[in-house]
Image (cartoon, rainbow, N blue to C red):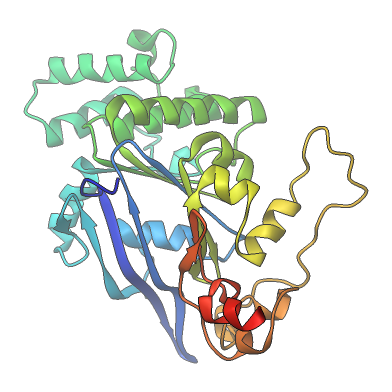
Length: 330
């Protein structure tokens, strides 16, 4: 990715929610890139800011949420400052979306075929017959049997896993450059989860799309992602190659997440537990937001907020990786 322009480039994104008691910052100075054919996993506890980051990128924030700072670039074009109508065309054609509940993306009153063909015809100059053929091909590609028959069925006639496949077909129907998948497997059985993960990965490779995969499940990240961004209290705590982050976490919060996952073949009497809970948006502490829960905190942590800094193959927002701190400790 270093030798070519990224598909998605998020720079210093800040999302705020004005309230009567003041302004809450849900996403604070978040930056990352996603390259062509790459899957970036975004992981963290509930309330970390994962989903809000995704909805901010596609401009579907619930009011009064707003982008208060930063920039979002898609294939070298800035999109966070587009009009609502311009952004609607970008969402349909250049960015595909897969949400946790497929029924939020599918209209129960229309057949899946009508929803697919209308989307295709909105963004491509095809006849209805050509669009229908393309829709049948897509349904077959995402693993729906007898696609030429099932295309005329309604969403309620599909199982949860099959509905999610339809949503993936809907996201891919105009060959988007970017796909944002927000908890796409959470509501599914484990066996169906594995199928959907494999499908997303394969389609990403074959279509060359960039994928931002939002989840709280490190198992899904390990199976699917090329890189992973770990979020905590609205900021990125660590970002790096998925294998490196899983095996050699550089941020104490990431270490805690990794330690809380059971490993087959390892007989542990007790899994690691991160004491406490993530702070509310109204109570984010000064300095490093994780310091009240951090077993490795020291004097600087509660006073100064660390930015992402190089930590081996990854980058971590932790003062343990500040060269000045390391030299003083020697």
